Length: 316
Figure (tube, rainbow, N blue to C red):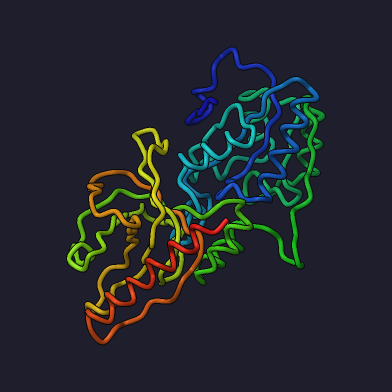
């Protein structure tokens, strides 16, 4: 799979393709349905699938300070798009200047001249161009001019709710990681580099990897979770994974502090992960954050948490 950072990296000999466009934060089940339909259109035409996405998130550029918590990094998003059929991912730098591009200019520069689209498949609520003036109907009209077919795909709804990145962010903020995993089609992942904390876990017999995620990462609500800890290589590929008990919060028993994501690899006290890029994946919430009366009470509860995590993760 190709990853292009901007249209300038698209090879001169890149031929026609089918295209879909969006932020695709989380690459959730709704996104996956769009990707499946684009891939099917590509298969019928004998053409590859190219995905256009954006970085940074458009909301932050258009309304500074409104950056939503991100469900995945650009690198992981690209990897997931590849899993669902993308032959190429073009990450367009989203700037204030780019946001002011008229709808017709966006179609001409990105879809026609840049990627040579033969078909464009998007969600039925897709908007593009300056002040979101373009919609699927206009995309179809411009497609006639620039020789591509435009298709709007209905959004996925369940129990009256649309499967969306916003819905999943809300579930995560409430600690409902199992429900979020259903909508994502996989456990939610938080990536970060392991940094040195106060090493209290090691002193208590449960050495944890303190993963420091980048800004704007969607972190589940405070509490203790069962999940997994994985070590990633320089390209983001996973090379080792362990079942884990995960703590998210401020350590109130020790008078609190900065919010942290700490993962204890079950039955492993020999791991040295400082400086390693890791992924922490959340399966089930075990309990909320609690301030204990004593360190002994905390250790007793941590022992129970580890046993509960092991039981959950051992289940089919």
